[in-house]
Length: 313
View 1 (cartoon, one colour):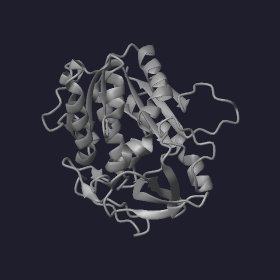
View 2 (cartoon, rainbow, N blue to C red):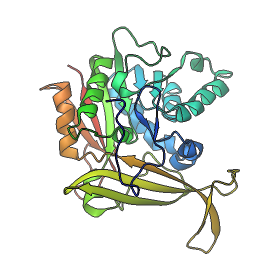
View 3 (tube, rainbow, N blue to C red):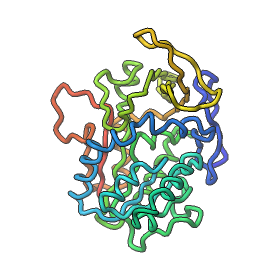
View 4 (tube, helix red, strand yellow):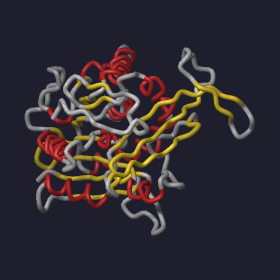
């Protein structure tokens, strides 16, 4: 399965079609998204409300050691390390990990907690072998995190969610009994129905004030939505970015330089994703679904993300 490549229409083709070291498609392989990722997510601005929600959730379940299974540039891992958790981090994209390694090097000089931060390249289809850079705890992790709509990067080549089920099974194996998986996805039910992100889109994860535009496209095959593509334009005013940029006009008439990148996702509908998780964790496993980390949102609330919390029996 690792050698299969998606056959998609050119309009919906991912901007980056590289293959990561252990086989998962790496949409960040051209480095464009990695370069502006902190501008998109908002840097320190992002960690306030999001940190409060995540730390509270982890402490409610007595979590100490965490596997950040989609660490990207390392921002969430750093947030948790500095909150007192023991964190190990993996990602399939070496371009994103480059920034995580740099972050660890910069911070270890002033904080010894970073000396023990293990970072490795690996994918969810083979978590037990993260290129010999991660030593998993003998009895498993208290929590495995796959956050920020990361899981939707895994395509469904066979049309039966076999890759997704394998990845979830591997998350389950990484947990100790009583450990929790925290995994999320965008509100794809809304996106498929309306062809756009929710208007009241929560900025819980991505709080960058440099987002100029996000264009949404939905690919439907035989009446079924099979891919959602988001084209991002990030304002890079004042930031050296070479020649790889475009110019756009703001509503106030200003002309700004933007960096463009495209990411494609498998659109997980809430009911199907819930059933898939329950199947892999087994009948009777505790499964809580939060709307943007809210357990009891207002009746008319339209979430941007559904956050699933499952406990291993």
